[in-house]
Image (cartoon, rainbow, N blue to C red):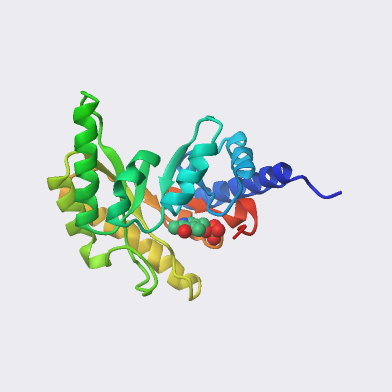
Length: 242
Ligand SMILES: *Cc1c(COP(=O)(O)O)cnc(C)c1O
């Protein structure tokens, strides 16, 4: 008998959670320290409901328009949404309205654009909202197709955001592991992100609690190298429906 879609998604999530737990144990940490983000780009909304039913609390999307389309059909069940794709400044306002965190900050101008939007909203809502969560994306592999700041610019960017964007909170750093290369390149990329977070913490005194790294093909290495958020798409849902 062929498993129904929700059953298949449940099985996939169970097995990924078990693999995360084993990787966390190898890293000397607990599975409860690792957030499993379901990456739902090009996945139907019914599959997303199935993931939320399995206790997935954060959904990742990489395009503002797709998130907007899904938001208009979403049935109201509770989930947080993180933006994980490249964000153009002219879409910042729309993105802030649709996402609970933007993981793909790749420059100071984008951060400032978001800061201004949050500033306006804070005024109009008449309250001292806590900082809007953002993460700085770093191109740790140096591959040209990748978004993110160069590793050498990471600490400066975090410092400038901390200094000039009081309505933002830098929750972490994010990276995409190398698309080409073997296990050692992958690990080097994740280890680099971890060390960049250490540098940025020392420089700013911020907590910067999260390292968002690891996808379907490399999340165990990411957890072993200190990742606290893994972003899994195909490993949960199967092939994307493009
Ligand atoms: C698509 C995507 C993922 C998930 O990739 P899978 O290989 O399907 O797990 C993770 N992070 C980002 C930034 C993505 O764009």
